[in-house]
Length: 322
Ligand code: FAD
Image (tube, rainbow, N blue to C red):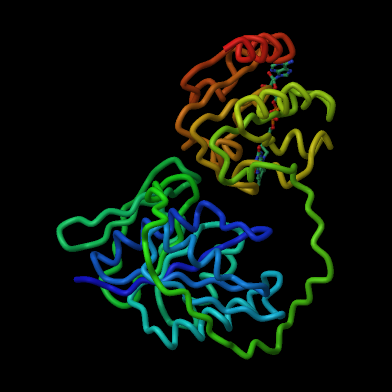
């Protein structure tokens, strides 16, 4: 049965995050030929980003621009998105399983008295139902779920559901809705970005991660060089963050970021269960560790037993010559 599905878009510094396009792809599966409606909140003109959502498969987009929505707060975005939901009465809602998605969607689901399937890695139409696959037990197993009644509400894990190809020939309306956003209880005074510039860790296709074996902040330099060569970014284990070698915004794992890059290279990381929870679903895992018994080799597709400070320069040289 065809459905109207809203996609809550997410932007960072004026650019839509890839997971927005992946959410549109998921919404198109859920809608089963119905309508996919993008929703964008912010303070400036959102029209160009609205058009971008249409190029990636939304049928139309509703924007809510308001000074109170300049930075994300669950109160502000919650009110704006709920106003759109009340107007549109969708049968489905999809958003990325990002920090904002994890904060906003449970609040919306409780207001709408709806269930929520969070962190889906696959969405398929199967015999008239929509089946979501999601990891459980820190990624050690997967479960399949479907929503049998009410709103089909889900968040999707970045880098898992392929976005449609961008098509500038697609037409669709971008309309602005005015919402009187008020009583915001959180005041964002300043945003201090601590993560490295460039590629966003949770959406990166290539992640070079360092652990306690990197031994110092300077020890991350060859990892950064390799990440730049491969168009990726640097991540870390909690061991490296706790030791002060890098910022906690780079932490991957159960209490850090959950990532699914195409290529994950672990350098001097032992492979503790809490770390594996954040990266074991990466498509190709390479481990460099001087201990042949390190647990990381149990999940690695390719393992290099050796000192990372010998291996990385050689790898960098080889790649430079390609
Ligand atoms: P270590 O375990 O010390 O491993 C260092 C590795 O480097 C070793 O295997 C060693 O052989 C290798 N090595 C040393 N020198 C070199 C060299 N020169 N070349 C190559 N290899 C070398 N951890 C996370 O990562 N993410 C989380 O989100 C997380 N959440 C946690 C939540 C809880 C509740 C708890 C209790 C723990 C959590 N941890 C988390 C911590 C986790 O248990 C481990 O302590 C941590 O992952 C270890 O980090 P590490 O692998 O960098 O360090």
